[in-house]
Image (cartoon, rainbow, N blue to C red; front, top):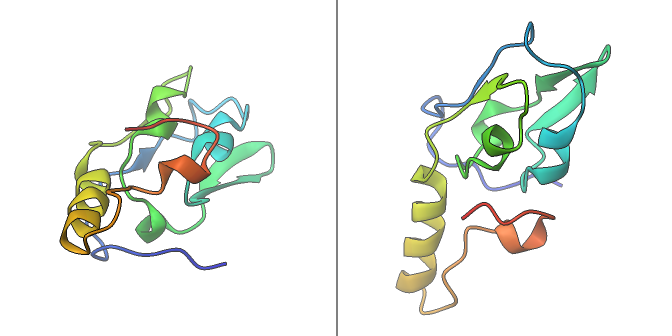
Length: 99
């Protein structure tokens, strides 16, 4: 299933594969399935799927992931307010609470 993509080529998400220990926690907490395992290391599947919630970086013990969190969540919350619906960054569908 394809997720909502925000503005292309502006995501601040970075992954240092040399620091990655392959635990897969980022895969578990990411609400938009941005990551996948490849040869016992995580890799970014489609960086433009990232909503910059920060759940991956907060849960990465070896600090292999960095992201300036808040931009994607803010967009989702504002969109909910403008649509007169519950403000949401889609984190409720995840096993984490990123916002």
